Image 1 (cartoon, protein in one colour):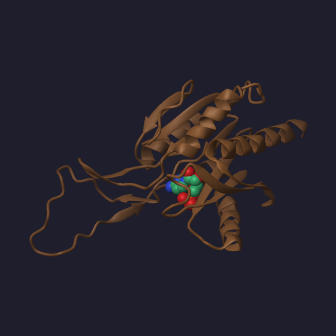
Image 2 (image 1 turned 90 degrees about the horizontal axis):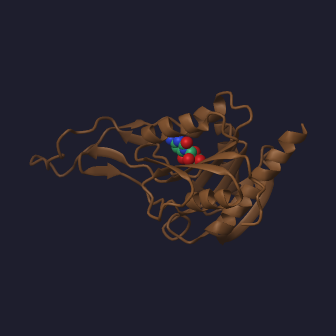
Image 3 (image 1 turned 45 degrees about the vertical axis):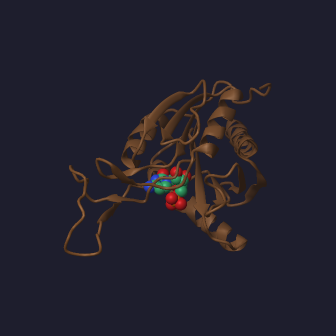
Length: 229
Ligand code: C5P
């Protein structure tokens, strides 16, 4: 691209969806394809940034020119992003991270139990990785979070997004509606980008690359703003 407004910047992007293992052959997962995160990584690269992509089970091709680190579970993603975030100019957390993981991983494939019709699996909370970064000192590292919600009502969607941005200590939050046919696997995305004062910075429906561009425009404007302080 011609626009090199991210030259000299180091940007970490997480993409995809985590898989939480149950046994050697099974996992709990989600429908995130990684399209939006990969589009952000590619766009940041094209605008001159040095990009580390933490990739969790992508269903799209790996982007070229990025430092790619493959992970699968939330705990693996946490280790990789915590390391990569050190000294980064921005961390963009587009990955869909499981809130819970199985309390234990069976060493052998879980067998059908003859005695009943059901199976109960105990889950434990995963760490909130973004909140962990947001609540630790992160001077000079802009934190961008996502909130994928199934909430149909627009006002309620924004309310959830604002509460989430504050709870996690993110500088920018991208809110998008997801569902059976929206968001995750789709080529398009509808987003509202919230800034640090909870104001709406951008509202956009477009292709995932165009949404990626809008998110990076906000990142660039926040960089410029910090530089002037
Ligand atoms: O709470 P929720 O999952 O809606 O938050 C979404 C945002 O938080 C995303 O940016 C996601 O990458 C991040 N997240 C995280 N660790 C979790 C759950 C979500 O960093 N355990």
